[in-house]
Length: 365
Image (cartoon, rainbow, N blue to C red; front, side, top):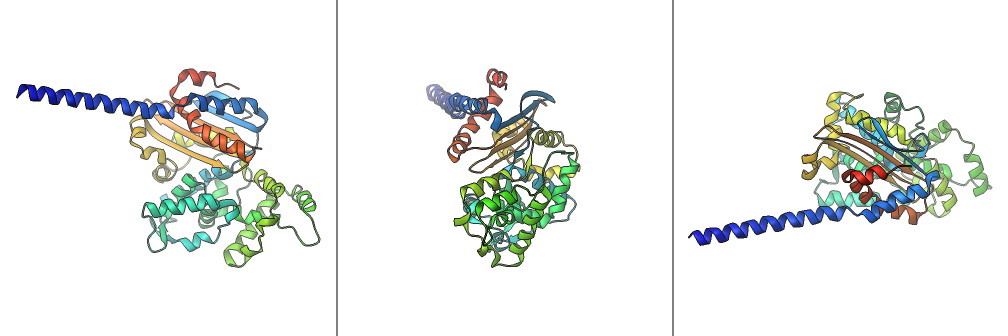
């Protein structure tokens, strides 16, 4: 009997040891120093196209062009998430209400959102979130952060109010942030009129003020919302690479430093109502749903934005030992191939940066 118990103990011990080794190897698989170096070296080699601002316990530990205005892509969704949280807290919206997908699809333009929007729909179906063609409002907001869909962004800004979303620029004292406007609506600004040309349109748009550009996008948004045939006036075949590049360059913009300011406020549970941090947790701090993160962090929020020309990433966290880190990395003027590489390299950079103090100490610009 003792022999049998001893054998069982040995088997149990071996199983625990093997499991520990497997878990350790799985964790190490995320720590790819080659990819981490590739991401870091790209920024080092392309300082004019990059902006970085990273703080640890309110001390700046990495900076590069932190006050340079850079397009945000869907990272501007952080402001939308903040407004969503505040309106949910004040019961101006019911985050558990169901919304028909047809209401969201009004703003769907495949040219700029096919991959993100359809990835979201596939994920929502896989998780049984869609009921009779409708989905919970909170799940729509969560998808904005996870999938970066411009269609969802336009729907939520329309629901919450564009002016309400914009007011957060003043709330967080962001001095350089440009206007927030509807994404789909802005595309129609690039319609080449008859008896005109691409060159003339580009020249004309280059003279637009921030206010004029955003208002034209808003009026187009209203046409999309109220007239189901208006979307048919957009011809993607005439949306040339030059026009696409200008559209990207004119996306809502801010600085790495300003988005770290937002991240610091969220990390410290400041600026907005204390009760609003529950929906902030639901929407913006989805990394906390992983058990391994729950062991390490009090809260952890993140948002990535990308187009064929832009890569942006903002994250913040507070560890259980109260160590705080906030980071914003914005890169613009990319080729589609460069953006794909950065997208592939970045998770390794972030993982190694957070876990390896030696690597962290060498990240200087």
